[in-house]
Amino acid sequence: MHNAAFAHLGLDCVYLAFDVDPRNIAKAVSSIRNLGLCGVNVTIPHKQSVMAGLDEIAPEASMVGAVNTIVNETGRLKGYNTDVSGVLRALYSELEFVPQDKNIFIVGAGGAARAVIVAMCTGGARSVAIANRTYSKARELSEEFLPRFGDVGFSAAPLEDAERVAQLMERADIVINCSSAGMGDIEPLCLPLDLLDENCVVYDLVYKPTVTPLVRDSRVLGLKAESGLGMLLYQGVDAFEIWTGEDAPVEVMREILSVPA
Image 1 (cartoon, rainbow, N blue to C red):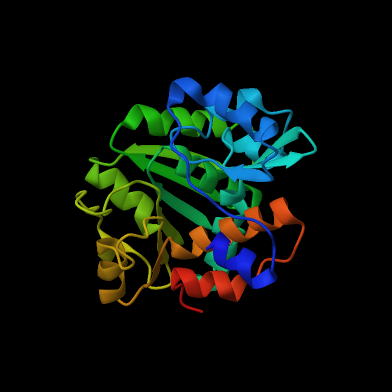
Image 2: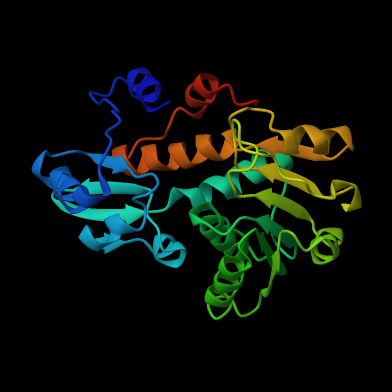
């Protein structure tokens, strides 16, 4: 995606992937300065540990507690989280969804869920319900974000509590899967999708396969549903613009990812 964008704009840049042992994360961050890299993306499991080595952290990344994009400004490293803007842009572009005054139902309590919660709350959500297999993690996440977003109603539920999950889903305006369920050989979610209002939309952050079991089952019921390719696109678009200061060639990047227009 990024290399196609660089080539399209004639920029003398290349995007490469590097595996970094968690024990060497401090050295890896220092190498951004030492090698004069324009910037980097950061993925799991490093999104939180890189923060200690940065000179500045953007507000949305501070709220999430994780960084996925770093820019090198003449040796000064600033961290961003473009997952926040990426999911908002994807939801609006693909599902015409805006979180203002909406009830949000989230599955998962990891790093992706943190970014989605911040996106929904800064977007004006009325309530956020978090369901997770490990209930304590969902509860802790809810308790952590409640003081930051006092106008948002937070709740948490064990994913195995069918009655509670059903209650929360019946009032949901959107269901967002922030877990790895349905990715590859991982067992897909088993949710009572038939309880959702006909106007409820479904978004699955998983994008391999491009039509996940959750998306497929939702569409069978006549619900609007999309996978996470759009979020992948738009978080990348924002990262590209942070690094280069150029307008990203969105359609070029979209074509490479095969994201529906």
